[in-house]
Length: 285
Image (cartoon, rainbow, N blue to C red):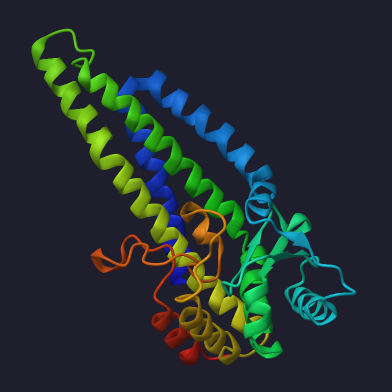
């Protein structure tokens, strides 16, 4: 419940930051433009981003004849979660990982790397599947899309503010111009950092929720806890060679190395594995 509440607060903060930026940059007109851009980008990324991600990671649909056990596991967990069975895709990578994407449960997609299928037992794979289907059930794709889109708009507007600051703002006199320049410098430097930190906090919060929901779906947190430890340890020596870092929040563990570990983990898309494992082992089901 705490993480659900935290997500709402963080999304509100991110939206508020966008509105503040629109107001500073262009008053009511700037506010309106920021809102229109955000809505357009939200709709587009929400509807089509899963297709882009599948292409980026060269994922191919997994035939049931070749992966009967995987299909059985997904079907069983989806039934327990009361959501349609997602389509299953295989990613040609030895990095052990998995993700869930898609605009809604009817169009959800699960992606598994070749590495994770080799590394995990069926029970552990079921724990990972439960985590990913929990993302589907909790509509995390929608939440992360909204957060990413607003953060992108904020960054874009901040770049516009850099150019405006170079030309001295738009004030009618020196005092007003000076105030505008200060506001523009705030946008250019601090706003993108604040937006990114809020977006990453939302991502970490949703991972904790998916861990808990997934464990409750299969009535056992131990398989997922063991799987996370294996994925973390093995993945260190087998980083993902496909895709790019901005998509790492989709995966159950970060497929790339060394992202955001400084500054107390503020720049991490995922909570520390040790914390996730601890919470799963302490979970009462």
